[in-house]
Length: 378
Image (cartoon, rainbow, N blue to C red):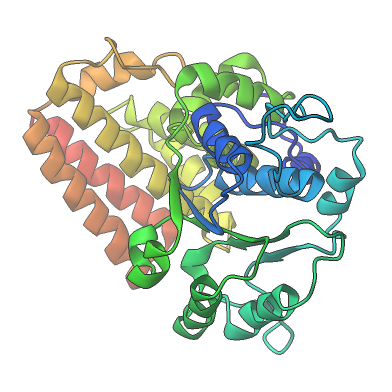
């Protein structure tokens, strides 16, 4: 498989990202709201993780900082000439000074609120705290440095603790003129109803295949086309998730796991022990957690497709060669309902092993022993 270069990740960060695919409807809604001259002061951009919410927020922020209020948007031709030509896109060129200042966190009228660094604990805080929101209040209490908009991006609003949320609510209740808040939220239902009610909601959906592939072509150019296609399926329409999986070797990990599953009901113990040794050497446990997550995801994918009778058919995209044949063979072992029961039992097995800090290689062996019993009983 091709190599993933994590050093390129900075160029994909929302501050630096120059393109956004698959969310033309959302971009049009933002552009039309701006052009109307009655731009809502607060937006909540929602959707699954990694679909481009933060990228869209920074894209709109750059646009607002460059163009300012559309004061003449609804004015027709006058005695002094035709109405000004309004932008038809949120795009701000990489060569534009606004783009570079936003990318380098150097624009005086933009504040991005994220979980801050805790010097005492030497790590990022688990929440966005009230001090972070007070910095927004202070910035919004001053005149815009460049006479246009002041923009705040909260990424993610779900990370605010209750004190921070209440402080933000005060801004939403009494917004200053020409100030725009862009709240990124993965789970808007967890936010205060009073915050949700004061924001215009803009929901982003997972990308379809037509939008996902050009996005991954741009984000992961060093991977071959087959790997990008596989990651697109694995990430379920989330470019950010695809990038994370590429950095973690998720595609290779799942391929190795399913290669062993394909030997059932008789396990290839040499491969199984070698795979377990790789997971055991990772003391952080991240590799095992990813393996468990991907396996549970794949098994659920297989069961859903089997129940609908569409493995290999319409709506089914192969992650890597041989995956479809494996899914078809496993689906013939037992009815989808029995597989659903096994999915729950295997999940409990993995969770129980993690809760008692069981040796990860032993957990893998236990997992395959349970799968072997299912295969033998078919």
